[in-house]
Length: 208
Ligand code: BEZ
Image 1 (cartoon, rainbow, N blue to C red):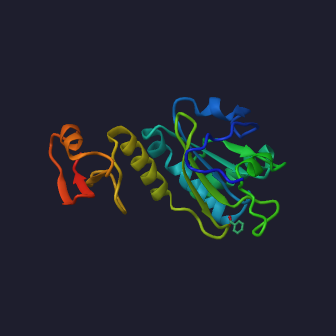
Image 2 (image 1 turned 120 degrees about the vertical axis):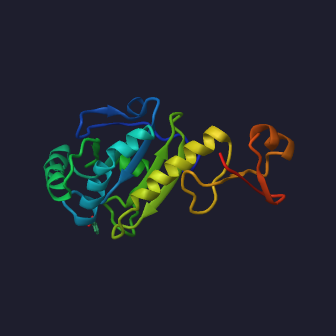
């Protein structure tokens, strides 16, 4: 069965390029960006790994720890990381899970047999410090992900948790946010003393 938003991310132990991990312990009190890719030494995956490494400071600033997975061994990952660093002009430091027996890929429904019986599709799981899945995305093998969007949803989730708000289409930090319809006007006035804008009774916006 596929994993859904709100589910507890399944725990697992695995070998990775930074040593063995127990997934929940590894996440600790931070957030995790857990993403799978089809195979080592493939072009789209190489650019994605490089981009994630280049964004190390941006992820750290948000308290988000990246961790990759593909159905290859630690030895293969280590050789490939040299290529990623060389071709993408970066230094990859985050762990990549070795899942040659597909155990974790199957646990997270990353194998889509109509695409491949053995290689993972491009799954994304954003997991919070309570180990709850907060976002899932699945990309096909031939489309690289947008890492600005991944950082954006981390910002949106964390802002939403902090202020109990929702975010409108294409929101980026600094823009107005939405007061959820479940919040009464009286409670909104208390929560947002700076005032808010009522465009419709169900569409209220506030600048944080
Ligand atoms: C790639 O990463 O370039 C790739 C991997 C599997 C299928 C298609 C593209």
